[in-house]
Amino acid sequence: MDDKNQIKKKAPPWERPMFMMIITIVGGYMNGYTYITRHNILSNMHTANMSKLGINIALGQWQDALSYFIPIVACILGATFSELIRTLLIRHKFRGDWRKLALVLETIALFFIGLLPTSFPDIIVTNLVSFFMGYQLCLFRDCIGIAFNTTICTGNIRNVGQLLYNASDEKSKDSIRKLIIFTCLTFSFALGAIPGTLISIAISTKAVWVCSFILLSQAVWINIYECSVV
Image (cartoon, rainbow, N blue to C red; front, side, top):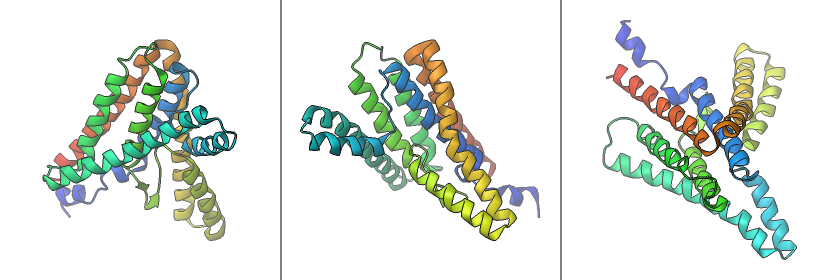
């Protein structure tokens, strides 16, 4: 088998654990970013937002309920926008994988978010971040054949538990490998929150530009892969 055929058999970047780990780190980073720069607000906590929405409705605290409802809607709209981008790019026969341009669009959006000062209303900034985290959630949905979320952790934690059982039951190298990979992927979200917090303390709102650079690098990675298989 020649080198060209070997290259063609390589998995695309978005199917590789390292690529997915980097994207997940961005999700965690953004939580640290909004927590520090936007008065302790987490942009990727929609399970908690759902609970607090219901609790505040039950207590008749309508304004508080609205503050939890809006980021949920922003996340929904972000996911919708992601599907719209995918549909338009595929329909217009965009050359290469559609997620490459989608990452570039997110890169630009996060760059402009970094230009907004701390005096800018928190509710607008945090919901913009929530929008683009919902958007990012739809770009990459699985890793090593298992469903995976890059901005929400609950389902990933469940999968780690299931893989732990499989590894203890089957005791095969493949089941243990999947457990290790998925555990690392899941906790990379928390790993991302560490620099997200520290860099935000150091340089405030412009800390989001780190994510812009990372996402742009991921888009370049996809482009290099596509060039290698032409």
